[in-house]
Length: 180
Image (cartoon, rainbow, N blue to C red):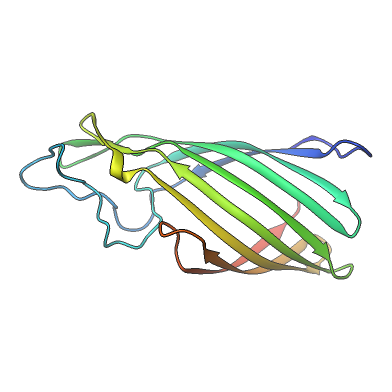
């Protein structure tokens, strides 16, 4: 939702809201012996970015046009709801997401974008035990090409490259945007 429009000396802003669903395999391991401070109840062999819990996200994105370039950046906060699995109460850490980038208009229909995307996730808790080793910070450099295919529809193929060990090495994406 647009908070305010862009002005000659002031950037525009958009308020964002989102819902994260617990898709994919559960990232939590449950030992038959229970949980202790020495155990880390997260399956590090699962190379998935699944949170394993429902979460709500809210944030703000800022943008400034300097034709043919658009500068943008933003931040959001994500709260993950607790999950109970095999009698253990898992509380995934809160997450701060941030991004900054630049887009360059190649034509009326095509835009090339470079974006830095990062997040910090606080440590996981299981039965009120805080696991410091589960706190993480991921960072990705993303290259995208936005192509307008209809007056209100865009297709966006992208390639992301991980910048730190907690990030995937590569991510390939295909986005579809539609303006109502």
